[in-house]
Amino acid sequence: MKKFAAIVLTAIGAALALPAAAQFAKPEDAIKYRKNALFVMQQNFGRVAGMAAGKIPFDAKVAAESAATAEFVGKLPWAGFGPGTEKGDTKAKPEIWAEKAKFDDYANKLEAELAKLTVAAKSGSLDSVKAATNAVGGACKACHDDFRAK
Ligand code: ASC
Image (cartoon, rainbow, N blue to C red):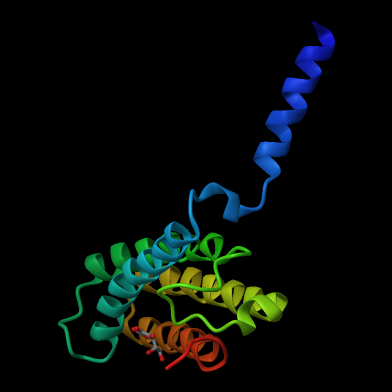
């Protein structure tokens, strides 16, 4: 019985340690997941960026909520870029999987800048929001330049 329990615990441990890709039933699901997460992130970031650019009236409360949502959702897409998800309805370049460390650096950079945007938005300072927005936009663009097909 003890041995059985040990085997079960080992199996649970292995399941928890599985690569993120394993959480998706099919590669198409992973692709959909990352695209949808990126879309929700962009919608929230875009709202704040619109305020920073003066295209939308600055509303500090909405900016803070949107930035916090973008920060959280910005942690999600990367699990959808697992092995075997290179091909399908995607603009993701194969280089992502060939240069995974570089891709991960871009993802980490984006997450860091999104966290700073939340802090800036919570401060209520439009100037801070503008600076942080530019940094987030730069992080989006840097990765797109290398890893997203036109
Ligand atoms: C956006 C969006 C991007 C980035 C990028 C920033 O809102 O959809 O891809 O910002 O345009 O340069």
